[in-house]
Image (cartoon, rainbow, N blue to C red; front, side):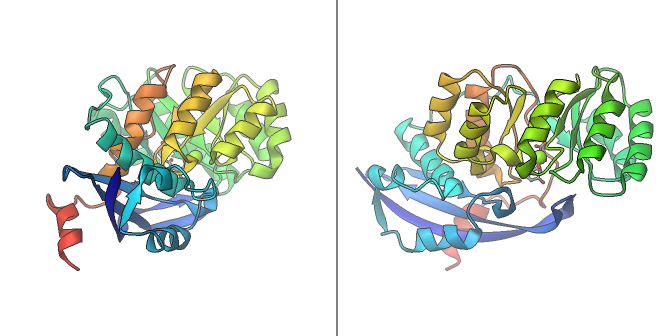
Length: 319
Ligand SMILES: O=C(O)CCC(=O)C1=CC=C[C@@H](O)[C@@H]1C(=O)O
Ligand SMILES: [Mg+2]
């Protein structure tokens, strides 16, 4: 079966820059793809790379789409190479919706984690998210000096309701000693601290494996398992704590399903800060593959100003 294919690049300014130890992220560049089947049914997909996590760059994704014919087949989609994981996700999710006649997995049982701003701004923002019903928050660390962040952390912990879970995401920005200090600080806060995410850079896997066996606070790998190949490698190197899965950049959904059916892993699904198209496709996978009810990192934090109703159609009209 052939599918008519077209695509549009989009750029969206974050309402508030995303500050992590990787730096300040102000503009989200993505691509929206459109497939139309022989019956005329339209399906959208989203390609939202995060190259500093290890996916392809937006230029590589654009170059790949530009060289495709305007009629593509299932075979072309399933032969997208593994070095284009965001493209694999975007094309396969668009195709799946057509092949499943848009039958969706219910996402009603998912719970969501809200992303707090880095630094002391978190002290003002958490109540708003709590009022919206979030019971899990994620806060970025490894951005400011550790003494400053520990001070903010202590104020945060004292004010947070006991039923609330806090995730700390260092984006690989801590030193080994700082990671140990955070783990020690969290040692008796298990009820509140769900995990520390990617405390060390991806080239310090051994150190993270050692720390995961030394402290009771759990460690979650994120950048270390950004692609399916990395996920498999970390599993083979005996990682049995938590894996953060970003469906938008990990690669082929069908290959991810196969891995999750073969191996029992403790996983958390996480956003690549995508539009509603990529978000819905990722939440489908989360609903299908989540086994332990961990909150998914897809809180509606209004990363972007609300799109007008017909924004998608206008992308195809304005050319
Ligand atoms: O996982 C979540 O709770 C929200 C998404 C999120 O934190 C991230 C998305 C993309 C890149 C990073 O800034 C960050 C992460 O490191 O997980
Ligand atoms: Mg992370």
